[in-house]
Image 1 (spheres, helix red, strand yellow):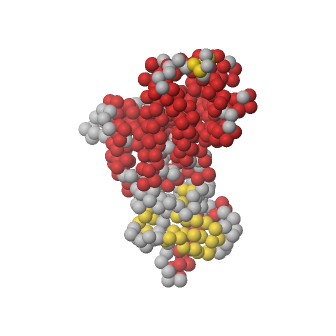
Image 2 (tube, each protein chain N blue to C red):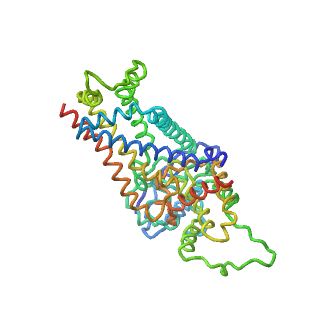
Image 3 (cartoon, rainbow over the protein chains, first blue to last red):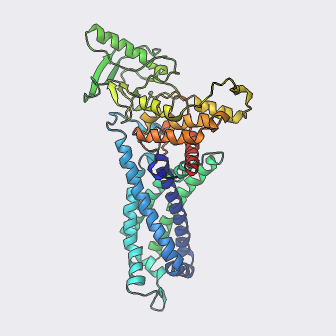
Length: 223
Length: 248
């Protein structure tokens, strides 16, 4: 078992595991956000629970942050190693003849997603950490009612931010269109279920980011 | 057909090299790509110029010796064929064709279009075999029942000719398809299972040491492979490797 992360297959496996974790996180994030367009109270209740339950705050959240950073850093480490594996490039290369644009440009879609995540952290996560752990207000209340739903709506008033988030989600979709099935291949799951899984992966990669876009637009136009 | 060829010329491993333009006229669509290069070389020799060095041997798609990156694809634009099986009918009159060597740090150029692919031999030497004793008690392979699916899948993997098109096509210069085919062909058969743990660990270790890149599952290797080696082999090798790592 020793040294598995020093091998090319071990690194692939680690990338896949972090990808699985991030894809599960993305799904639960989407489900919670989806409640915001149907019922503000449910969204407030779940947000307050997620923001104050110690397991999520002190166990899951650090794992998530580690997972994001690990996936990003490992992605760049692999990219640098792969660039070193070909010193001289081709004068003419027809990559489109044998692979998808998404699969060839994971590093760029990943980079845009990371930039988007920084903006997302500045918009939501840092103010939340400030309120809870610096100001010390764990009540989740503002003017006698839960603040989460109002804060969410306020963020999506400026059209530039909505547009930025939409672009971020498009890159997320592009990344997932290759990444979802690639993660399964990396852990050795290529069997009779692969065809079905590819269909599910495509649906996941398109519907989840599309859903996030719809949520942002609904809050922009309903405010 | 009249064609313009842009061919990589490089005097030796230390030379910088570059593309040189050549005109070839009256090319028959029924010629193979290598025959077209033979004709060009004859012209060059008649003119007193250095002929273009390129690899070839059997010229029937089984030896894995021919290579060439033609118009941006390993073995050219046709599917399921090696360069020696590629015919000029795949091109049009007036075309400009780029001809480059397979590119990878693990495949250094020796001269012109000839590259050193012995890195793949060293991977094979690291574990791509089964140890058969010669005591006289060796069991005949045909005496061991093997289910047809496994036998067919192992045979499909064994059709890999080790040409290196997978490495050349991969944006990461990964040799995973080649190594996985060699791992699979043994892992699926009872004779190969005995040394399966050491085999996969040693072959992957050698692959990494040779400087091949990391697979990112683009699937380009599978598309460009002249023998249609499937990505399923890479998934099988990943499983074999993880299993072996946990054991060993």
